[in-house]
Structures are given as C-alpha cells and as structure tokens.
Amino acid sequence: MTVTSSSDVYYDPYDIEIDADPYPVMGRIREDSPLYYNEQHDFYAVARYADVERGLKDRDTFISSRGGILELIKSGIEMPAGVVIFEDPPTHTIHRSLLSRMFTPRKVAALEPKIREFCAQSLDEVAGSSTFDVIDAFGKQMPMKVISMLLGIPEADQEKVRDRTDRSLRTEAGAPMVVPDDGNFASGKAFNDYLDWREEHPSDDIMTELLNVEFEDETGTRRRLERNELTTYIAVVAGAGNETTTRLIGWFTKILAEHPDQRRQLVENPDLIPNAIEEVLRYEPPAPHIGRYVAKDTEFHGQTVPAGNAILFLVGGANRDPRKYDEPDRFDIHRNLGGHLSFGYGPHFCLGASLARMEGRIALDEMLKRFPEWDVDLTNATLAPTSTVRGWETLPITVP
Image (cartoon, rainbow, N blue to C red):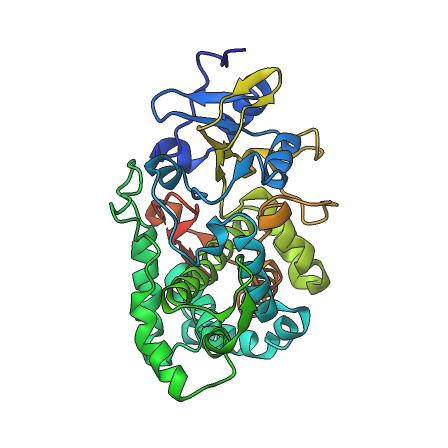
C-alpha cells in the first residue's frame, strides 16, 4: 500500500523552527501519520515507541552500515573501517566487543572521583559569578576532560581535539550536513601522532589498549587493528564522548530552571538525581532521531517501506508516546521510566551509556551544591545546528 500522510503534517529535520521544538510535529506523526514520508528529502519516519523499538532491534531489516545519519544514508558512501556505530554483524559484533572492554562497570565506577574533580575545577572557576554561559564554562569542559583522560589525549591538546570534532558535526543552519565525496567524514588522521607516541610510551588508556589488542576478525584471521581502523575508532569515541554529555548538561540546566520546585527537591534530596537524569534524557534526548537504511521491504501500519530507502526512528517522539508514558509531555523527576530510548536499543545500544549517566549525575549534583537556584537567558541562548544531536551551543544563566 502506498504511504499516505495527513497533508498538514510536515517534519523536516533541517528546519530550524521545527528543531526549536520538534515535539508537536513528532506528536502529529505519531498520532496522525504513524508511517510518515517526506517527499522533499526522500525519507520515511516513525514516532511510536513500539515502532522505534522494533526498528532499532531489527538489525537485519534496518541496517547500520550505510550510516545512522540521514545525509550519510542518502549519500551511498562506503563507511570507513572502525566506525563501530555504523557497522553490521559480524564486523560490528567484533569491534563492539573490543570497545566494551573499555566501559566495564568496574572501570566506569572507578572514574567517579576524577569526574567530580573535573566538575569542581570547572564550576569553582565561575563560583561567585552572577551570570555565565553554562555550556562554555561547564558543559564543554568536564566531558572533554573525561574522554581525553580515557583516550590518552594530552591536556594541552584537549580543547583543540574537542573543537575539531565539534566543527565536523556542525551544519549550516537549515541545511543538511555536507558529506565529503571520499566518505572521509570520520577521519581520525589527527590522532596519528598520539598513537605514535603511545607505541613508544604505553599507558593505562584506550589508545594503548587498542594498539595492543589482538582479536579474530570476520575472516577468522588473528590480528591487531590496522592504523586506519584505530584512528577512526578513536575519532568516533572522542566525538561521542564530548558531544552528547555536553547536550545533556545543557538540557538539565534549562529544564530545571523551568521546574524550580523539582530542582528544590533535588537540592534537598540528592538521591533523586539519578532518576532525574533519566527523565531529562527521556524528555529532551540529545539525539532526537536515529537513521537506518532499509535493506528489505517492510511494513508499518499496513503500509510498505520499500527496500533501498532511508528511515528515521524519531526517538524524541517515541519517548513522549502516551502508549508508553502517562502525561508524557510533563517533566517529572519521580516518573517510573521503564526504559526510554535515548541511548538506542538492541545491538547498537550506546556503549558509553553508563559513563554518560554517571557524568550527568555527578555534573548535576556538583552544580546543585554550588548553585541551588538559577534562571536561563533564552533570549541570548542558541541551539547548535547539527544533523546528529540537538542541544545548546550557548546557554547563559543567572544566579542569585
């Protein structure tokens, strides 16, 4: 059956006005056009929780090796080796198992003192200020220091690496991401010098471990990672580690300014913070949609998505599906969540989820200790234009 959508439902992931508040449009898709088709940009989309969960779980129908971003899927480029988030089995299974060694519960838990130290360093610098940009002073600082420590990036180069990754994700406002003709969108060549250094000076970091790890690849060959796989691996980890946690910090700052009663409860009872972070992630997911390539004909709600198309799984819409949550447009730190989709689902569930949760929990705890009250200056705040994540590039706040 041909896809039919309500004529007045229109979702454009590049439209800056829609991006400013995408939830009304995602809600219309979810309720009125459960399989949506955008003719202008030639993609399908679903926004119901059950449909998004199904799609993210079905790695045979909705494949990742063509990219998880609409522009990459539409470009038809070949993914460079090592982009673990854009791989299918058996390569994905092998590469994911290598990275999973870096994010074991024990290793993540051991990071808590350093994360608190990094938070304190950033927040103490603005202590006593009546106004500051929470993204520049805090949101961009702590995640950069954490992921750099894990990777083994020298302190002197950390801001340069973060800013280079940040620029690679930026788009012109209202326009798609420009995909290089050679497909070299995830180049990690800049990390070659660090890898050379680590070969001569091994340390307890991800670079050293990846340089020395041996594994059996999809051909049954026992080997180490090739240099191009290594550099791409590191570029992907650096980007993911910096970007999404920065957006999470921005969102909890804005949301709690709009819900001062709930913020006060967190100040009085910090044990509520972990669940508050989960509710922030549900309410404002840093990655509001996830793209997939449709490998074979499939149906949603009696309508067919033909093989060869791109589909967006609208996580932002799924996280506010009333079939899953009561009063889903209401922010509630006491909500019994039962599994939001902000870290994905299934075989590509975010490897760094436990680290991101810890960073968010500690960041909010440390911020509330120093600044139990604040207001946001939305007039001078700006959303970052990207095709991958949604969040604040600048977010000035004022404190009493």
